[in-house]
Length: 128
View 1 (cartoon, rainbow, N blue to C red):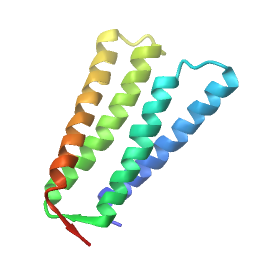
View 2: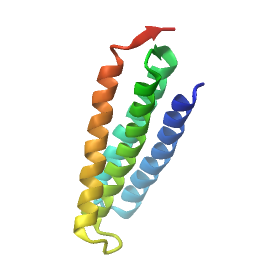
View 3: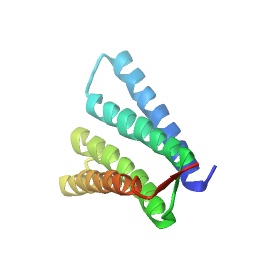
């Protein structure tokens, strides 16, 4: 398994555990304050990163640089978006709103770039 596949797979696993823990916390506490963060962590963090890891296992991307950029923006964007969403919505540490908004929006934009790079990568594939 190539490094980018493994990185996406491992980050997917990390996000799956975080998402499951958030779900368990919400159920135990009877509070759904984490609902949007929980949903994004599982859908974008776990499901999407896992799907992309499988994609790289099934197809060979003819542009290694494109694949590397996609993987990097996927991991950075997912982490930034979900962490930014948590910090911005729940304000856990009294972090200034400007910082939390930059993290939230920056992560979201980076993730959007990742989705666009994924689209572009589908035009540079060879089936294994």
